[in-house]
Image 1 (cartoon, rainbow, N blue to C red):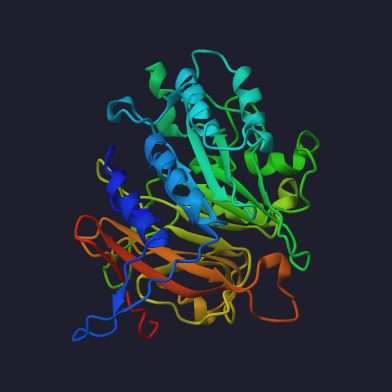
Image 2 (image 1 turned 120 degrees about the vertical axis):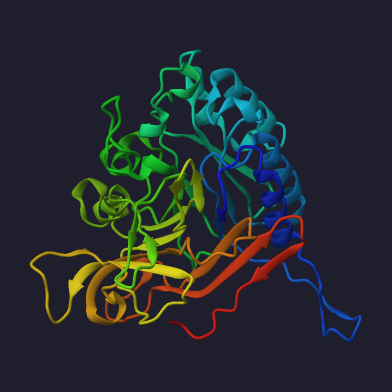
Amino acid sequence: MEPRDLVLGGDTGVLSEVMRELISPVALPLDRFDDATVPPVLTRYDLVTFPEAFATPSAVLAVAEAISPLGPSGCLHFGLRPDEPSSGHLFDTTAVRSLVERFTRLTDSALGDLDGFVRWLDDQPPDGWFNIGCVLAVDADSKLRVCLHPKLIRSKFEVDTLPERHMSEANLLCLVTLQPRNARFGTITMQPLICSDALSIGSDRGLATPIAAITRHADCIPDPPNHVDVVSVATCTPQPEGRRLDGSRFREWHLQFLDAFRDAAEHGDCARHHLSSFVLANYTEIGKGLGGGLSGAFLPLPPVFKRIIPTVSVSCWGRHAKEPKPNNAWSGPDDDALTSWSSLGFVAGLDPFAVDPAATARIFAFDLHRLPRERSRWRSEGSIVSLRITELHTGSGRMNETNPGVPA
């Protein structure tokens, strides 16, 4: 989910509209001349990722109370920020403890979802300032499940002379494993991360990055999974901008993110992530002249589609099939990589210049035809399919699903 702007205090209406669409959609008229309506159908979702520093604890707790009575659900991954608009996006140790206590009142303590987080928190200095994320879901027994996870890698925007703006790097690894009741289906493991946690830049504490640590330090994880299937990344990151040959503007994922995707797919330290899909949520505009956008997904697979809808941009890792360069590279918007390149993977995201100026947020929904680990190398399927883009106009009661039409 991609909000239009990073504005403190501005997420409540956006989050409310998104959740209303997921759990209480509006009935649609059969036609404009008839009062009869089509019964609303709940939106089926497996994972919804929101940006970094997006939702307040109060807003997320309200979501938790709303989904708890509705039965099993998919996962909702939030980047959190304090309830007080003036306090920035970091939580001091006292605020983190308060957050734990508020969630504990909503969950079954016997499940122990927050036990590991509490043990980690007990070891933290009282003057720490942390960036926190949260995953919510309702399990097969209709019980609310909660995962809180701290950010491990400080970004350049979180280095500051003021202690309340200088992020404390954490050392807690978090994984969420879904265990289906039907043994026909395998488990799925998700790793929730916050922005620079996904990068291969290392921490100031000298610790392994969260992705590499899942393999390098697997012995500290109870019953470590053989593979991480999905990496959900809540981001707030500016994207570099360029111009196409026709003079139109475009943005592309920052090179450090593109390098991180490639490292996850091939680096030896990331063996448990070689077939991981990444889901990324960002803001369209960060503020102070910084542009963002490109919320979407990375797959370590060749794109099997030759065209894409105009509101989605794609960059491929590979090289021209007939005029190969010596080395692989990431394609640009003028390379026509979907039709003329031999590619190993791709990243697809929302074009930040193809948004209605009145929209306050966009939702980029898609399905994975096959998880990369389930895809047979003898077959060509396994890409993202069934793309839907919904524009949200907060306050107008409108959530418009754009018509993909004929792919460009």
